[in-house]
Length: 224
Length: 199
Image (cartoon, rainbow over all chains, first blue to last red; front, side):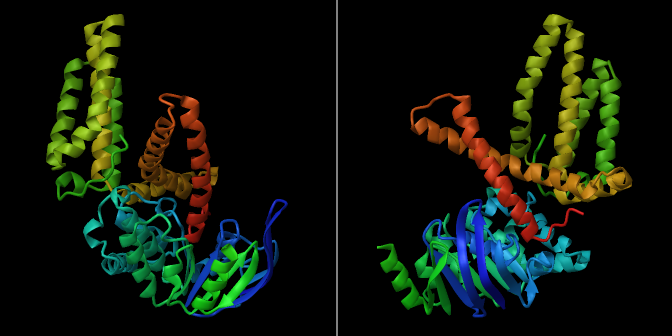
């Protein structure tokens, strides 16, 4: 469970989030908002990539300011552009990167890499260069790399923005099938239809919070 | 030289990364010290044979080697014109033997194996403040990001052409630098998110 307590954050003089208090416990949570509404900052606060200027973010009771590493073990993060997340040249080497950072032994790394390749249909490409994968496959590899680390929660920052319809569907299915909690920041409103909860942000504040249909309706009306 | 790993079942692939790097450095020393066109020609031929032994697809090899041939031709022409034919052959022999061997090592060695070897090899420098982990990650990221940055440069060039700018270094370099810096920022976040600890 993730709690935000009176969280505010600014970049220089520009406030990005103002006084946000939320408890995120549902399995599927969507976050929507216009460009500049504070969505990406919100996402990065959830696993300690950014620390709040004011207030506190707690993951299973751990303050991100106190132990960001412990928080990042619990909360994985998938970026919008997989090219910034893929570190090693080949598919299987990249999957192993995060696992080696967890200091797992070689056998466990190999087991989890094999499982991730099978789960995301990337086994045939295991020795291929990540550069030659399609956009959808790269995003699947980025997701697989995070999930192999077995976090309790995965935060997705606009995971389908750069993808075509087919690959958007693949990623949506991958998110739907996750056993973990998923918090998805997105402009793709269709993706959120069967989510448990949606939070709409507007100018750094919570505009609406609740079941998808009602929140998306309020958000669409606000966007005019 | 920054060729990417191509998987094959071959004796060259099966050699440990450390052994390949040692042979590469040893061969580099011999090649750089030699002034015999015959020995250097033998080194180039030997390197070419190793490519065959590694069962690498011809296309991957040609892609890697083609740009080098042009550079070698320029080196040869310059040396032959300014010094002698033999000096041209020596320079080209050294250049080709070295880049062929380096390309062979990168095409037949997984980056993660190379990184592990480098980490072990540099571990003794830790008391001097050298962080072997950081050096190794730098190597991996360089190999990973060269094609990404090339693709970005190509995209920017196309965007400039679409706006009527045919050739302008500033029009290419400024947006490329902005993109690269933004990417570096995101990459740093991604490394943190994936549990990387530089200590």
